[in-house]
Amino acid sequence: MSRTLKAEIEGLRRMTVGQLRAKHLELFGEECRSNHKDFLFKRITWRMQAVAEGGLSERARQRAMELANDANLRIRAPKDAFADTPAADPACAVGARVEGGGGDARLPMPGQMLTRMYKDRIISVQVRENGFEFDGKIYKSLSSVARAVTGTRWNGFLFFGIAGGKDAASA
Image (cartoon, rainbow, N blue to C red; front, side, top):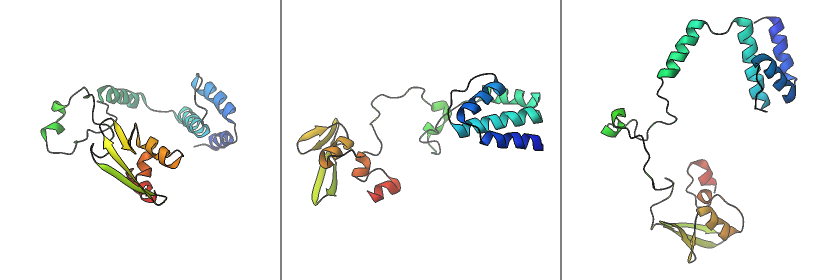
C-alpha cells in the first residue's frame, strides 16, 4: 500500500459521520443509509484500497457470482443437523413450519411449578398452556409475574433463573 493511500486512510479517522457519508457518496456513487462511523470507515477504506490496487479480477467476480447463484442459503442449521436420523437428510426437509410450535424452548412443560425466593417470600408460579398462574391470577409472561412480585421490570427468565448461561446464575 502506498504512503499516499495510508495518509488518506488516516485522514478518514478524523472525519465526522457527515464527512464520511459524503466521501461514501463520492466513492460509491450512492448515499449510504448508515450513520455508524466504524462501518463507514471500513467500507470507504475497502473501496479506496480496491480502487488503488485494482480490486478483484473479472475471473474472481464471475466465480463469486456462480457460487452465490448456486448457494442454498440457510440462516441456521437444522436442529438435528448432526443426528443420524432420516430427518437429517436434506431430501426429507420440510419447507413449511408447523404452527403452534410449543413456544419458548426454555420454558418447562405446562403443569410444572417455578419457585424462587424473593425478599424472604417463596414465589411459586405454575406453568399453564395459556400463561402462568401466580396467586390465583393468570399472567401472559414470566416478566409480567416478576413485575407483579417486585414492582419493577424484570426479565422473567432471569428472575426465575431459567435463562441459561452465567446471567441465570447471578440472578
